[in-house]
Image 1: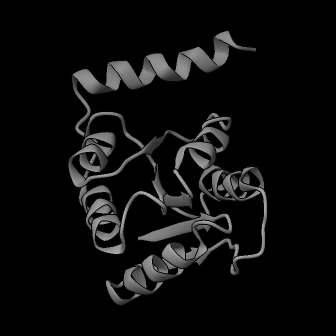
Image 2 (image 1 turned 90 degrees about the vertical axis):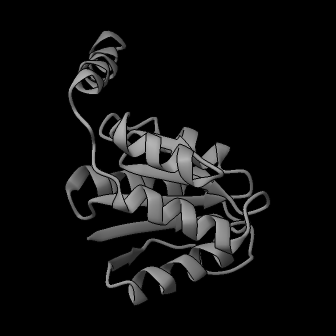
Length: 148
């Protein structure tokens, strides 16, 4: 699976660790930066990840900032993305299986590397359940049309 990763300065170290781990797990990783602790703005990295998902350049995405909140908001500005801010594996799994999330966001200041890996594994291994959940995802998509 091709997985895009993006982070701001607060999340770059965790992003790098996840990128290395995902590569070891056999995934193709698209690293969209940032790659240092120099201050940057999370919206630009969230947008880059959302564009990679929207274009089909990556199947799933993992975004990291200090709390996971800001970058999740940025990603959810793009209609082709459903990004859930998660902090434990069950939420990551449910985001995927119930909400057809194609991106998760993690807070590097809140979630350690082992928990982050558990979240990513639950997210990557999950398949959308469809059924009654598809109706709800369709309703989410219709909200985009209503906002035009």
